[in-house]
Length: 126
Image 1 (cartoon, rainbow, N blue to C red):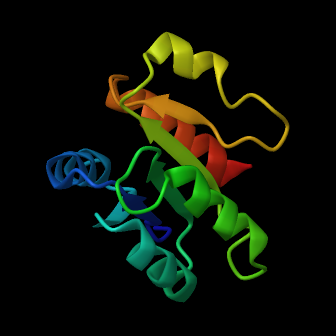
Image 2 (cartoon, rainbow, N blue to C red):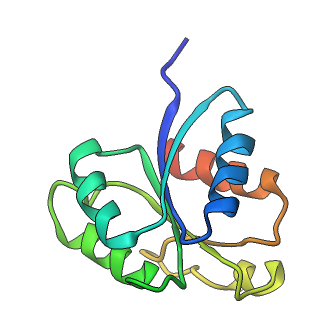
C-alpha cells in the first residue's frame, strides 16, 4: 500500500479543522495535520514539506493568499500544491474562481466533502 497523502491544513477555526481532518482521514488515504496560526504554519510547512497544503483564505494573523504566495516564492516549497478553502464564497462562486493557468483551486467550505477530496486527488495526480 502507498503511503497516505500528507496534508497540512491551515484554518483559524479549530472546529472546522477537526471536522475536515476526521473526514479526510476517514478515506484511509490521507494523513492531516492542522494549524490555526498561519504564521507558525509557514515554518512547519518548510520543515515537513507536505504533499499538499489546504489554506483558509480569511484568517486573522496572515491572509491565506499571502501564505500561498510565500510558499510559491521559496524553492523548497514552490512545488507543493495549494488549495484554498473559503467560507466567504458559495460553491457556485468558487467554481468560477481560481481558473487561471497557475491559480490554485478554491473550494467553498459549504461544498460537500467529496468535492474537496476530488480536488485533492486532482492536485496530487497532476
